[in-house]
Length: 229
Figure 1 (cartoon, rainbow, N blue to C red):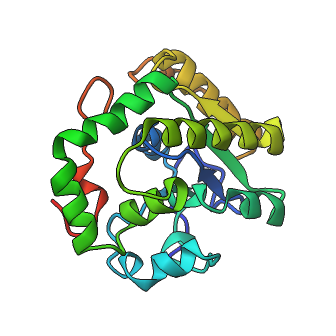
Figure 2: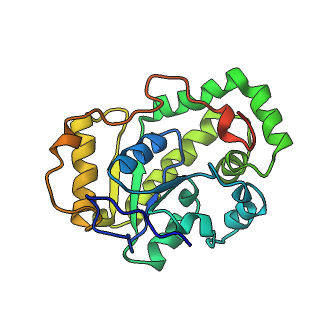
């Protein structure tokens, strides 16, 4: 099994695992890009893993966490939002990042899927084992967007995380509203405090724009399903 990557700013192979536990459409890919720039490896959903698109996902959603594919990364994003409670309780060294977004714009990002709704639903019916479809069914119970259901799930998910995870092990970031300087500062401080990164000068990062992949753009919902391009 490949070891975690090493970077000049990183302490070494990370014994602590980092989990991004948002429901998605909250800046998860932006944070993945940011940690990558810091030399921290990540896995976001099932991108690049054909095997994980099959029975492994269904097995995972029912309680398994034995994918070798994800053991090769320092941070796991997207999939970890399903079993964050188990991940929190089973290892006191695990750390968690919760990207948040104003509820109004988060709901709007889901509503925009209506523009490609029939195509998206057809993809999910054709590839029902795909991560995006199973993720949506797991949390919301249906593929068709319903504002009341989505709002309830989003608020309950965030509330439970904030009430359960000790704040020392939880970093909450608002990619859509916080400045680049504040986002970089809080992310780096969190990693330095937990000895993920070395305590050194990161001013070059703090001065650069924080990745905001879907900020101000139509979120690409088509690629949520397996084999869709």
